[in-house]
Length: 191
Image (cartoon, rainbow, N blue to C red; front, side, top):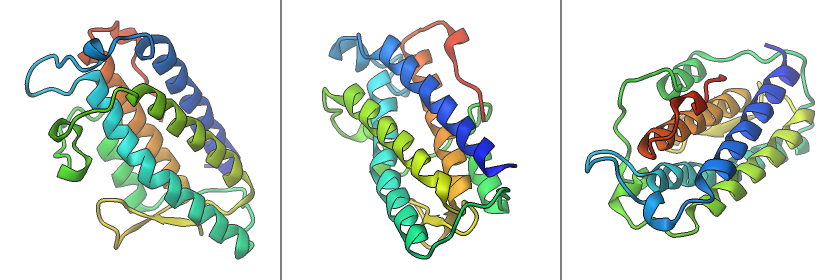
């Protein structure tokens, strides 16, 4: 895959996620955002808070990795090659994967109280992610790596991580749409 096409695809899809959240979730009251479809399912707010946990860790880790790559002068290369671990990680969170996954306790919002500004924090995190995509256009997406949040001994190539984050965001935004009984034609599928 061409590196510039990967970054453009992630940017375009992230803008679509932002539009979906701003148009559909931002206008909702706190009570509607926190309404669970049933006791075993996350509310819209819980879906977004789960994504906020990931953005909090990965946006910082991506920024550090980009700064490290810039210091080492790892310039952009035309082609990105996904690794086996990258492909497996993306497939595990892809919106088309209907298999339920066990969420680690630290990343499970249903075990805590979701702050009322969940939507605005999500939007801020996605805007920061867009800034990081722009910054990554000048570096090697193959050499630049980021530690996996749930298993810090492993690292993903930055290109794989961008695709992972996008797929994960799409998966849980789709889950939030279902939790709020929105039209399923709004669901995101672009990785």
